[in-house]
View (cartoon, rainbow, N blue to C red):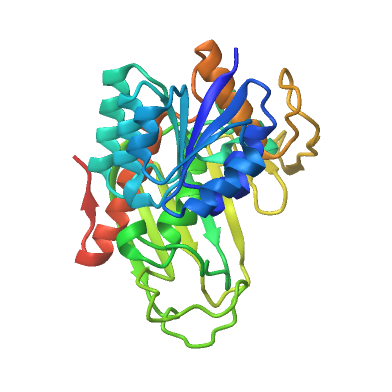
Length: 358
């Protein structure tokens, strides 16, 4: 069976991740493309679409006119929730790009719609599909680290502010590096800990470099007048069981300690560090050890054409879950907690007070 796929949003993330990965899945066929800029949808249809693929500028029209099995939502954060809900109600399974939504309320509405329609909903946290992430997750599940009671989520760039699209627009995105890349580090950390019950957070977002003119930057100087989000943000998260997490994120920060989509874990039996490859550490027979894990980077078992690229693995496992009704790697309830915590950090920064979860 071949699934008929519709792409909503044909910008950077669709071209850089979703469409190239889906193109490698033989059971998936991209037959409809939608973007507010018609030329982008037309280009995507030519490059990635099936013969006679359709092009739209209105996603509602696409959902009405096309018989689709799966929708990939690759739009700005502010539209994730309404588009996802509409797609679910159009009888489609949905892969929504991260973060799940701007707010917890919007994310919950997405989960409600998935339950109401009986369709699958997952979120595009592709870093879970990295070889090191999957190895470490299995080690955590096997209890090798014991009780993980302290962790750090790392998403630090020195000067890599995205200057295209709507990344700098608070209204469209809901925030800056915290919601953009901090969300990946937090997702990885919670997944490893298998802990989705936050008690409270204390956070602070900064705009110390955003107003710099002609700043050195990986993608050229940013426009300070359009930079309406934070340039860095940090949070301390206390979980209900007493475990704690420190989350750090930045697009622009005066530091040499640069790392992105990484986690550091400290458990009662051992620890793990992803910063320079994957290293497990602990104590055995009265001696300390650190064990650098050498990981193969070949293809993925059972999926023809899937290499070690996380986007490719994500696409294959997602389509397989839809076709064969398998358990999702990224469950929407888990992604909801990520959104809850990010929202709490932003709120704590605004009020100067801890943010408590109900």
